[in-house]
Length: 511
Image (cartoon, rainbow, N blue to C red; front, side, top):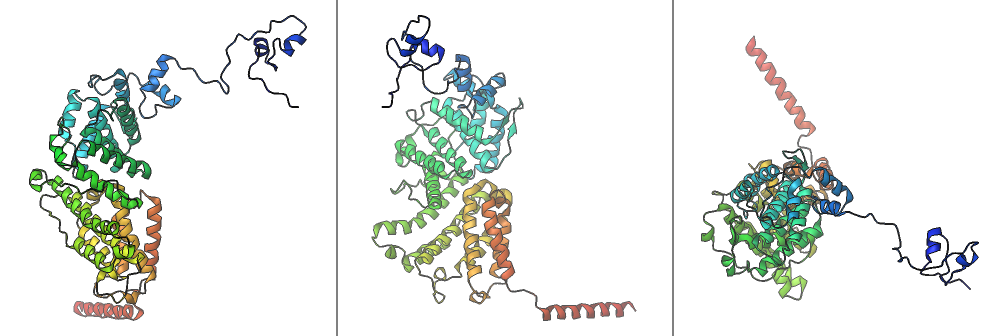
């Protein structure tokens, strides 16, 4: 019979590191040549490898590290930078650990990124007063919640604008991941769930932007849903939003929930999931936003999503999928999207590009609904029900983006890149799988020209996403190769003869 293993060894067997049968006295002690006391006084040790013991000093240093607080390497790094300049030590002095947390991130870096947000990204997220933030950073009056918002804002801005790591006054390099980690550490220490305010809502939103940019889709979706839920607890989705108190760093609080609503809907459509907020949204009066044109521009983006939501509402109300995506309902939605006009007066180019790209992307989604429902026909009288509709959308997108520079498109980030890719990819598929004779010759240029121009327009952003770039590049190249040649052999011969005649006439004039 197999001998049962003991759960305890005597003190003598432990010191000699031999087996013990657990009896009193044990067999090993009885067999020893000298008399040995068989006692069981030592407390049982923990099984497994011995863990490293931290002193209170090293534990404090580990708690204060920026971005890598759960690694021993971060603890050592923090000890080496503990004397570096920090964000003002009297940052409301909530705890000594908050001061330690900010010590590795130079205030100069934060100020620089906030100014970049003010210049390039405010038109996309017009919810933070950059001047108020810069003032509080300058005089050291930031509390923990405001500092957390600044870190989240800087992490999102740095990722969205694809900024390289920056060196502070002390030479310490800071990147967006460190800013994000510092933000998440600080918000946990401040018990943000019980001390919820509008700044906490925006922290969740900017963490969503950061994770969406680095393509961590599950985290991004959870953060935007956290922002939605927090905003509802504060009443930002109702008329009670005007009673919510802010300390001046939050701008345009009337449209905070609109920004969250639009962001969640757009991202949920990318992931193919239903958004968490399904109640009718109360939109602020445009007259209240007359001072800030960027806030008014966000309302125009909201109107796009509200129009597109008609498909989802019909699908939820009707038990039949075929009824929800009937040709008439899809055609009405596409027509409503096409008729939406955007006010370009005092409107930032980035916001206009956002609206244009979103509109053409939604028209493409409507067409894809018709395609998946087997509703397309080459003889349909409605353009959206034909196979050539992506050609029209691609042309309209190119016309809309005409005159917009790379700097205008860069602040929009990966979300808009995915939308442009969807439009271009649908156009490429139609070109590759449809005979050239199916396309109308009403345009001066053909579908391959539109695809080529669209690819070149978004190429600066595709270069940061190798997978999307390789897919669209291969399809564009194949479409151009398959396209009919613009110059025939006969046309080249005729041009050659005309050139010879022109040279002969010039020689006659000389003589």
